[in-house]
Image 1: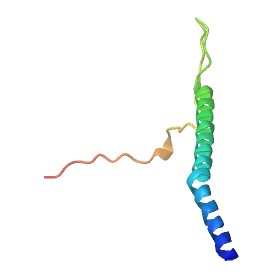
Image 2: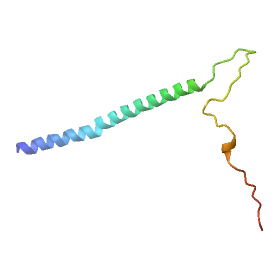
Image 3: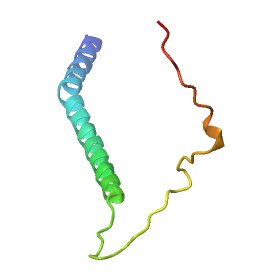
Length: 84
């Protein structure tokens, strides 16, 4: 009889955990993940924005080292003609 009562109490405990506590924990984790992603997005947006320029300021921007340079490595251009 004692085993049945213990099993029943364990069953009730699992019901409470899976019905009430687990959804609250999942909701909390999703909210924290969302806030983390939004913070990273804002940080990335701030980094991409160019600093404000003063009026009349001249600035020369050159391409970085990762810019693709055109040259002899481009290959050969083939002009196709359509045959009917």
